[in-house]
Length: 193
Image 1 (cartoon, rainbow, N blue to C red):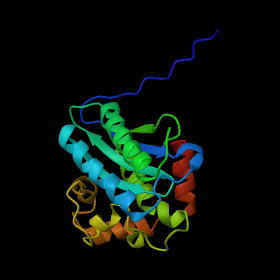
Image 2 (image 1 turned 90 degrees about the horizontal axis):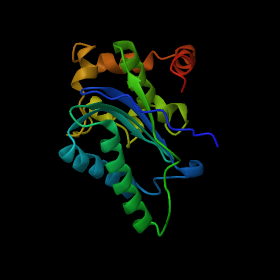
Image 3 (image 1 turned 180 degrees about the horizontal axis):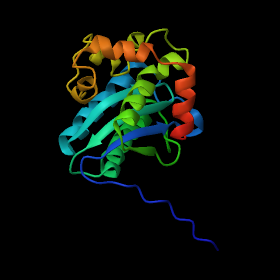
């Protein structure tokens, strides 16, 4: 019998990750608006236990994207708590049982500024690319509205991203607007999404 063990995750204090977690069989993990808002409450509660920074997020109907900066706690503790709490909530609220998420969440270690910026752009444009909305500010379950000042959200850390744009959110919006399909394809190919 061949022992196939999972590759250990790389972690060190202050590491930054692009996290992706999908519903099992790509089923919806958010059925109604209350589900999205409950997930955000869970993020806030987990941040109090394991302090970490959320640089960007997008809660899509059947998957989650987050750009997370750790501090002193490993990413697996942060994610395990989120996943457990949300699965318990979902199973109770929707009379569901069993696994909600598909396998192990994906975590991509962000190692340079360009990768950080491209990942944030990818996350914020996800509902546009999925043809859910025409503009990223129209999607309610993303951190982009916080970046644009439409909503206050204490769990989001916009300062690192906006520091690349002189703290000017209109320049950040122009950066998103300038995204091309070629850049998107190159990002997907380079970082194997």
